[in-house]
Length: 169
Image 1 (cartoon, rainbow, N blue to C red):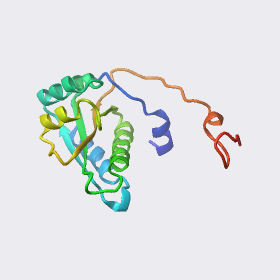
Image 2 (tube, rainbow, N blue to C red; image 1 turned 90 degrees about the vertical axis):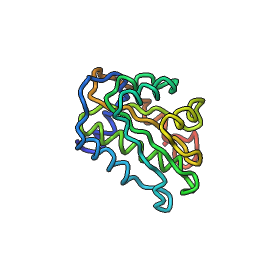
Image 3 (spheres, rainbow, N blue to C red; image 1 turned 45 degrees about the vertical axis):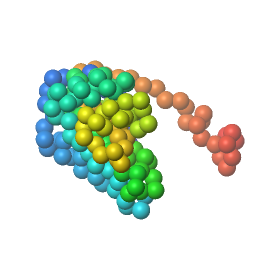
Image 4 (cartoon, one colour; image 1 turned 180 degrees about the vertical axis):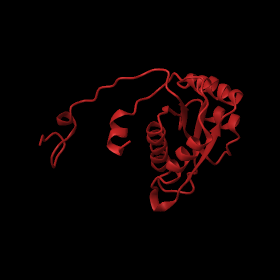
């Protein structure tokens, strides 16, 4: 799949088939995250692969907007080290987006479950054994889609200005 097509056609998926994600695909997704750019090449991330159903269910119970993770065959937690980068949130967000696009290119569905600063971040960190000095940026649910999503976008003319905000071009 071409990159621009992947960007244009990726959607958040919250319902998954009960089919396991091959380990080869998991590795490709993680590699996409690993190769993300980061401030000063700090690479302040680490990834926790959530294959165990019990662990996913426990994380899903804690994650207010991620209950569907319990039904996904796979999850990936993205952890960032605030001491390792001047921009750990941005760095981890790019790694997360790379993984979302890689999974889509492999025919998988994903959904970004935001965790950084959420009311449940500390509880999920506890469940996953994440050290206190690290932050849980996001959790990605991954699997073969059991739904198709449609999405619209605002017209580019509403979003783009020339030289100054509000000046159409």
